[in-house]
Image (cartoon, rainbow, N blue to C red; front, top):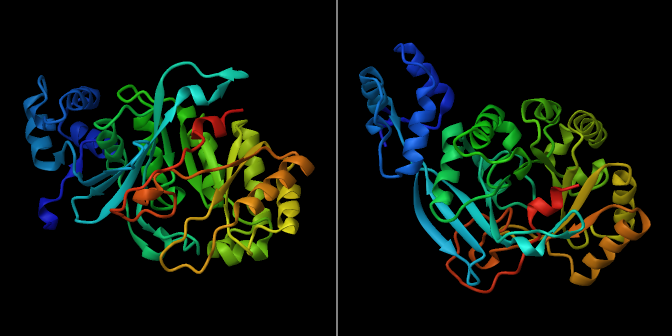
Length: 372
């Protein structure tokens, strides 16, 4: 697409507000526009009833309701997972994954949750990723670009046309805290009056961008933080997560302490299990010692083999043993994730379209893992 034909998303809120104010139109019209286009998905923003004439011409020239489109949609055999391939106006693509859960399977205040099913949307924040985690398929792409706030929100708009969305996790393509401004703006839109999502139903995952961890508690109060840890020592972490050289483990844990002092929130710690690398008894004890005094839920993630990786998944027996050490010896709250959508390559770190269809297993809801 030619550069001249590129337009802003109507959900790029800061740009839209600035352009409205530039022509003397009050920014409150933003919410009028959003409310109408969400209720009428086929309507362009400049056709919203009641807009001042000056706004109509400006919006028609510079904005589109949706700058992206769903190019492919695939649902797992059991219907629990839907993956959306979303093409941006520049021709690049990102993926978003819808995961459906039975509310009755979770717990609340010691008893079963009330209500029917609910859905979690896993969104992307970048095209590719520069963090280079050695187990992650997305990391092999390198960084190709940042998404705007509008492009992030559009993933929610597309997914909401498939099913109502209750939870959002920033666990798709990219390192969210390396696209900080757009992620913050996107979440503020999602939790605002038009979408109305609860901040406690949104989780931002990071491999450990320390300066932004220190900012997010103030900028996004009530939003959950997930930390991709994957190793309990600096040496081992550098082997698995190359950017650990820039963000040493002792400084990362200090940032986590500061975050929790401000936010008073439980942190979800993600740990991909790699056979013979980070799954020994010794490592389990090191991890337990590192985390035992923190308010965290440790989520052990069975590895999904990436195309170019030599890693192998930890066996179920060793996974269970690892969990027992953490729980029984160190008292760390520990869950084991069973990936959804493996038949459509919908698992974290494996966002590549696959056409094979099998049965996908269940996944503990992110809402249950983040709750106190």
